[in-house]
Length: 74
Image 1 (spheres, rainbow, N blue to C red):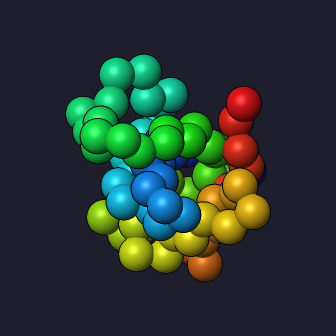
Image 2 (cartoon, rainbow, N blue to C red):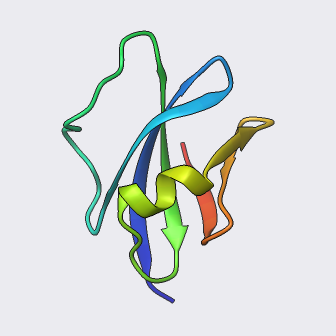
């Protein structure tokens, strides 16, 4: 199964921004002030950030999406 990389920013339990890449995201273009940054791996075909963002939720310390399975990276 293929995978892609996700970097998401969380503020008060809400996903406020996301970046996706086919390689690990080392230097993000975004960096919302005061947000907690999360790194994750999406399982399956690559999904761009614009399509993934509206499907993301953050609960109990984990990202989830209706488009793919997401694995946290520590």
